[in-house]
Each structure stands twice: as structure tokens, then as C-alpha cells.
Image (cartoon, rainbow, N blue to C red):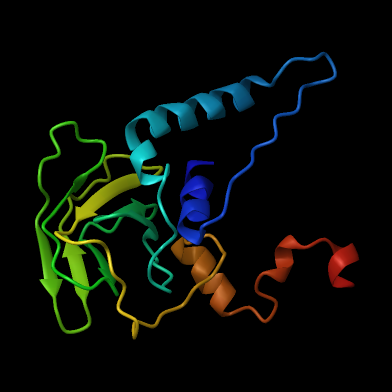
Length: 184
């Protein structure tokens, strides 16, 4: 659910969760636990969801998703890349980067390549949160996307294996539709 929440934020859509009781009028223990996990994650990382805008660039990142607000982009890292989290399309050199869950907001090393507007954040070998580690990348001015930046944009999950399946499939996106809709 935490992954899906980040993907919805990056696409600029709302997430509505339906909770249905059992015939006895109670909720399943798993549903309660999942909602508690989302609530705990939101206490720490809610800044990356509430009041943010969708991803400012028309890109599909294999590592996850991006939201932004004012002078900050939020990287929702769903697929950890210990060699660094890289993204393109944001104009300007970042002033700093840090894990949103770090109360001290210790700076992470960040580099910027002006040619192509490529930013890379150096990260530790292991993800602080295996579900969705949020990295805040701050700029000295409001976030601006390079109007010439090009990339791929999907509504699919961004796990590497899923991307591979989608790119090789003639019916990408159709597998989620019932037969009554597709006519298959």
C-alpha cells in the first residue's frame, strides 16, 4: 500500500482505500495492521505526500517515483540502488539532499551534471526503509523541469522485473482488465 501511495502521488491522483468489514462486522487483523503501517510511515514521510504535486518530469524511474513541492523534490525509492539514486530533468544544482525519516536531516552527497540536468544522490548500501525510503532533494529556487527532458511514463508498478515484462508484452496494461472488458 505504501508503494501504491507513492505512485499515486507521483501521477497526481488520489488514493481512496475501501475498508470492508467481515460478515461479523469486524475488520480483518491484516487490514488493521496494514493501515497502522501506512499511518506510521506517513507520520515520518507525510511531507512527501501531503500538499505535493505530481512528478515534474515526464519520466519513469526504475528506482521509484517523484513528487515535489516548492523548492524540494521527494524521491520515493522503491527499488534500492546502492550505487546511487540518479534522476534527470530538474534544472539547477541541488543545495542538499537527506533522508526524510532522519530527524537530524544529515546531508547526503549529491552531484549535478548540468549537461542533461542529471542529479545523483549517494546512498548507503542498504535502504533505511525497505518499503519506501524517501530522499528530499532541496534547491535554492522553486523546482523547474527541463522542457526538453524526455522519458517513459507508465502507470505500472516500477519494480525492475515488472518493467521488463511490460516492455516485452504486446498486451501491456491489459492483464489487469477483466475478460468482460477486454473481450478475450
